Length: 114
View (cartoon, rainbow, N blue to C red):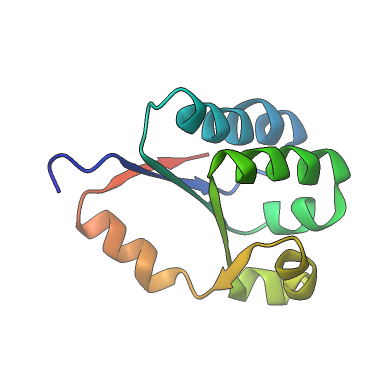
């Protein structure tokens, strides 16, 4: 695990500028510039609704996906916000993230929270 070059980005901020100019930009550039070998963005809370409704965010996510970024959303949040099907239609994995997120932290994995 010491040489693990995987990054997890916990995306909890639905501010459009933060979403486009930090989360999505850094996730994509991390792979296109080979800063990390894998990047997974965990969509948690309000960003699930932003992703489901905002075409600019969706467009940037498509570019990031083409670069190899994986997107996964918290199913509990997506259900509460009524966006499970929309996220899945966008190619986003929708799963229970509570236990896996806890495991990532317990293993001291690289986790960036935004």
